[in-house]
Image (cartoon, rainbow over all chains, first blue to last red):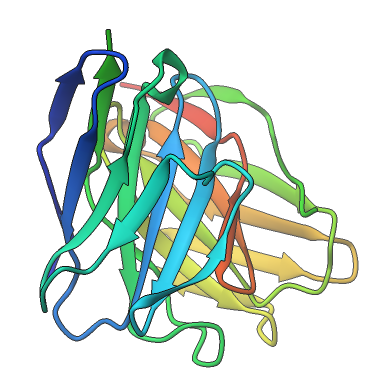
Length: 116
Length: 110
């Protein structure tokens, strides 16, 4: 069964440094998402992406965050200047359709980001 | 803003017992509701998806119901096994994004 893959599984970064989290969505999917889960808290929506632009973003997704689909297979989340509170598990997801088709979102195993 | 609440937060049962996990949401105008399983340090595995027009979905030992008018969903797991031990997340779809509950952590004792 096709999977969403995320790399790396664990990323350790110094505060203030830039970090890029990478995701390879399922190949025929059109909608892409990032979520995060701070340890012990709920999973939170960050951003959705379709047709090379952001469809929706949460209040968490401020100017230090950006997303990109640099080629036909990868979907990346960049955090420009990391803060201690960015430490979390980041999940990438993809779906075949968006709202109209109500297709389920498929999640990767996540990248654990630790900011020192 | 959609709020998704799950009760109880944790549950411990002996093997073979049936599990009942409850979820409530504040906004009945949902697109669909999904139940996920999360193992420690792992990703999210989709278990069942109920569209807003449906009342229940079944897969093997799992059955999920949806009552939009009361803002509730229930996940039933029949004849629980130690391998069912995990955190179960209720997730409501609102437009492009998903709103997650905090989860019910289930321990099935052998």
